[in-house]
Image (cartoon, rainbow, N blue to C red; front, side, top):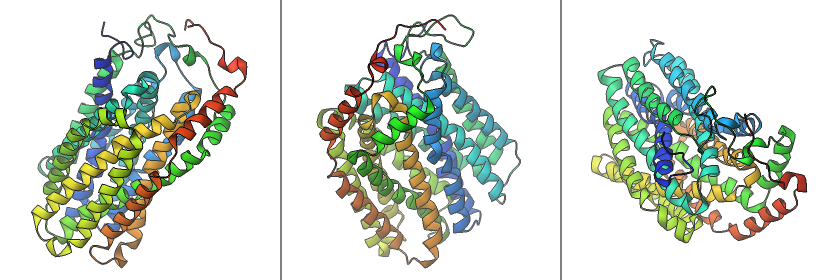
Length: 443
């Protein structure tokens, strides 16, 4: 029998890295490879923007999944593991259905809604994995774990983006999507093999029982909603919601504008863009792994502010470098700079938002933050599609720089120690019966 996630640090760090890689596989297909493929096939900028906005929209609905997962559980198999298994199974099946659809690059509407279905299950998987991480990871391990999880996701979408960028041209849509489905299926087997805690059921018909008292407590939807509203309206939480909007709004513009610009205006092939984007993302993620211990030691707020500032400067350099836009080395350097700074922001933001969560509703609260992050990216992509015809070359980069700089300034106003005190007061105010311990129950 393999060790459980809670009993082995190496196993849980490896497992969460792999689980995040599974999220990255469809991201590489739908966010990196397919927008460039569609653009290179002649799709209009507005159609590409709609594809990105709609296919990423399910990531904005993650706030609906969190309360459902907190309300409906099969605790004998763990707090979140049953949902991870369910979501990844759905992810494999929707990818197979997309491969069997016989769609081509001209079927933009069909591909858009197929991508929407794929990302719906990817988003549910993300919520479940995040909830599992909050429960299983010790607080002093979260910076390092999030760096590895970020690496896993980027390695997943970088590898998938590069492979799919090549596959869409060389093999066609169906074989390319089936390769992604096979990759997710391998990691699904790992999820099935690893329990959260020793003594839990491996599968519904296996022997085992509830091993964590909190899993036996089921909050009502009304109670979850009241607690969630209370904690989301705390000052630091509201401030960070605005910071998330700034960060991901700029990101939504970038992933929509840049592939169209490079393939349609500057003559890059879709494969060339996918490869360089994937390579720069992978290098950034590898360097981001080194950041984890520093975040655990010095705090996430500082690195989040520096990351947003660095992102703003990278976008500004692209805007001021319009005379060099015909130079491929300039854009390659730009992709590396942007993705490095984005990785710093990603790792530090995830760690910081985990620490903002109230333990009683941590999975739901974190799902709301991450749902808002992805909805903000969709808003950025859609907004760019509306204003793109009115922008001069370089102005999209100036817009991204301004929004990122605003986010960096707002992070400096966050008071995390006061937020922690407010969370403790909320916890202390809970009725005694809610705080009473339970014993592990049979299930």
